[in-house]
Length: 535
Image (tube, rainbow, N blue to C red; front, top):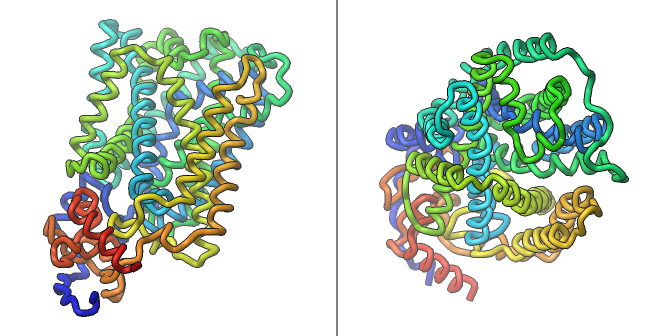
């Protein structure tokens, strides 16, 4: 009988383990719950996150859409995107800051232990693809200004990012992006003034050139911005470092309307203005994000080159950081490799450089389009999941994610995600040339199916979908699981009780979430214990 088992005493404390704190300087609790003591001051988190804002992708995307559908329709799409991103990320911010979980860990509660690994792999691949895109912009700009072989510049640009993300968000990224921000602002203003003085003001881009006859150009402009909903996942991995009491500030400034007004609105207007000023055509811009940076460097020389280096290095710190955390999580769960995040920083760089050498940017564009379907479906499921947790009165700071207490698959989450993704893929693959149905309705329908189907499945949810019924939960043995630390028998380090489990394969000694993820014996024993408890 379970009640006759004598459990080993938990080694508890209310102080952070010094070894864990030292490790967190580079790891950022990427495989663990982020304790309240490691949360960032709101201004520092804002500076770290605002590195995302300076990507040349955003001026490029706005200009591309304006050339395709007209400036007015592009601005309508941008306005709607600011509203949508702000509303969705308010929910994601709340879930992340209260749970302290990464996308990988939070996905376990939606999809189960195995299903979450797929989400992690997609997120890691997407972040690496963005490293490739943004890194290529700097490399092309460097070759334009300095000369030399492009493959050498690829290597320099990619691996120069390593020291900037070596110590993670809390220890370094806020300083790097904060220090570069004034240079970015001054250089950007100077480049715009220089371009207008040299080329003259030609107004904004005219009405649609590339997609005549479209019936819903404003919707197609909005849907184009849905293609980068990976920013919702980016938000969760950063917002887990936010203090819950700062939620109101972050909802408006860091992850809310202020950020997206600058990222989409301000950057979009600049992109449209500069493309019009330089007379860049739709054909020149299509599939070539570097077209605008090259013209800037050709006109302004060193000033433009420095602007591009500053902007792209800022965004690539974020891209590479998130690639490394998700590669680490995927390897821990699927390959059962317990390697530090810093190893995966180098691994992510190596993968990105290999992709650059194959010159497969057209393939990367297609890959991002297909991955975007799965990511939009993930967002739909995530919103429905948070709503379900609220309806069933399950606290976000107590959502189950521990490897030995979540099932391999959550039927509701997996079914909704697969269904929505499959429908999105079918719509894209079967859309006839020139119909423009996919461009207008594909991603909105994918999102609606994910949100609606999970909501429907959740009405029939059983308790076993979210968590396995197992005895001997350390969370119930302490006064406050968010303050008590418990020593793990495997790594001998102390982590929050919130993530600690008991290991049936080791006499029910305490084990942390990271060690549990890579321990096959623990997983088998935990699932066996769950089957016994149900029987």
